[in-house]
Amino acid sequence: MMHIDSHSLWVAAGLAGQALFGVRFLWQWLYSEAHGRSLIPRAFWYLSVAAGVIILSYAIHRQEPVFIFGESFTLLVFLRNLQMLRKQTAK
Image 1: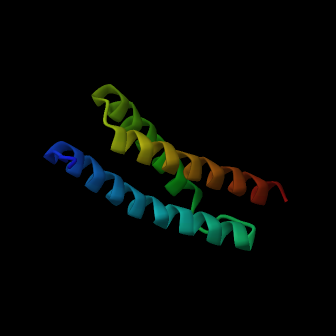
Image 2 (image 1 turned 90 degrees about the vertical axis):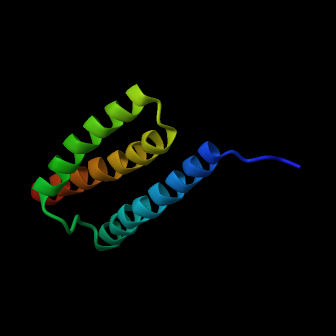
């Protein structure tokens, strides 16, 4: 029988929380993609990228897999929204 320690349970709980948190960004991203434009102001995305880079740096320093995974995913969404906003402005 396999024994799961409390650290593993906390990592699993953290990953579940990050997944739920990330799903709202995924939902927003798909919603914006379906409408062909980002539906949230540009400043929000710049602040999100700045905060995400700082949090990801901290997570890498602390070697926290939950935060590394979560921040890596959300940074991609933030950057994609900025790209969509640039395309909107160019039209």
